[in-house]
Image 1 (tube, rainbow, N blue to C red):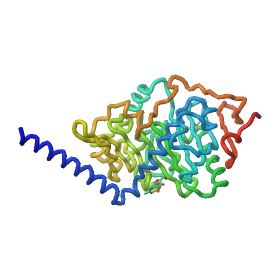
Image 2: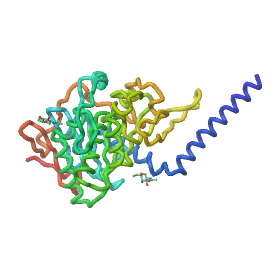
Image 3: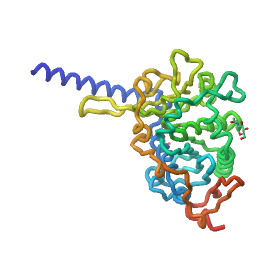
Image 4: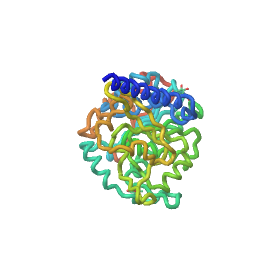
Length: 345
Ligand SMILES: *[C@@H]1O[C@H](CO)[C@@H](O)[C@H](O)[C@H]1NC(C)=O
Ligand SMILES: *[C@@H]1O[C@H](CO)[C@@H](O)[C@H](O)[C@H]1NC(C)=O
């Protein structure tokens, strides 16, 4: 009996040693320059806020999700592609002195349907200007072939004109992470902007190995945060016996998961290798959880209104432009406070 107790104590000590050892390496190795968890906790809140159903609340930054870590944010533009049910916003975050760009993915009837669909996504488009690089046309077009691209680029240009060449942090969750990735690449490759940073949460794969390798060249510091058994980063599937032909994540994954024994549980942020498909990260577990998908760093990424794509807003209060197809841009000039920037037409 006593021996067993001793053994258990030993095990516990070892575990503690391993954990604190791990923390020490995180603190003192170059990995702090790879992944900044403080920044991740800020960006995940921005990525969550875009799921606010009421656009007036989002635009005036009065939504429930807008109030936590992210006070002092100045909303500049919200771009809505009504037809395709897509949305992005652009603003200035004074606390991190950066432009923040957030994408929301498509909200189909149920997240389950969307996830099932992901199984069948084909690599069906050659990425322009990058030989051998293939991506999924639907993900690509959601950014490149909708109002989002023009809206986001002009929002960034307007904000940089006012605040100077500050960094641009691009983020998004799920399908929004896929769009954020295409946006970041576009800004670097086609607009030749400096200071573009990407951090996504629970995004699916978007292209093949050749695409991932270009991506890494253009955005060497990109971070894909994955959570425990979240199913979406496992999709569309990766076939390890066919590594050049299947979907392949770009680096670098940071896998957040729990380790521990019984009541001693630690959350670990594992910084993965630079292959994009580190077998010791989320790929080491079966990706089968939807609930792990809608919960990141303690923040709910659940849409407030999953069932529709309906736009809730008070048209009398906001200044907006609508194009011929019914798409919307809510817009302000930078430098105005949140409660003065809009008015009735
Ligand atoms: C991490 O990000 C936060 C917020 O942007 C910043 O204040 C901090 O200096 C960063 N830490 C490192 C080690 O870069
Ligand atoms: C973009 O949209 C146009 C018109 O709808 C279509 O012809 C074109 O194939 C689309 N491009 C991509 C990459 O899907």
